[in-house]
Length: 120
Image 1 (cartoon, rainbow, N blue to C red):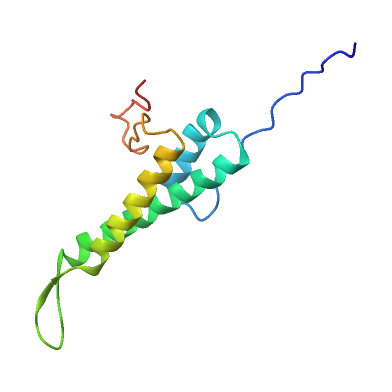
Image 2 (spheres, rainbow, N blue to C red):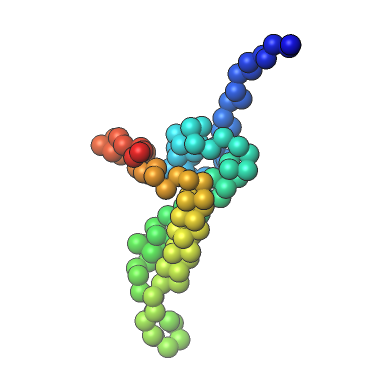
């Protein structure tokens, strides 16, 4: 009977370049422990891309305001990015839950006072 040779696991790939520093930190802290297969890694990347999109929309809304005024008619409308933020957060949540990561608490990696990463 042939002996089974233990091979060391491959190192976890580095975070994709297009992700924000926040998403890259999430990639490097949660990914190696919870997202091991290639198919799950693709979904994980998509989830983090959606999170980045939602964060970018929120930042723009905070700068420009929640209400936008139509130039021609001067009618007040909710900012169009609110819908985009909502869609991105919904897509993030769906992918995150599909990966079974809904018990993982995301903390701000740049805030040292928040040291919890996971609730089990």
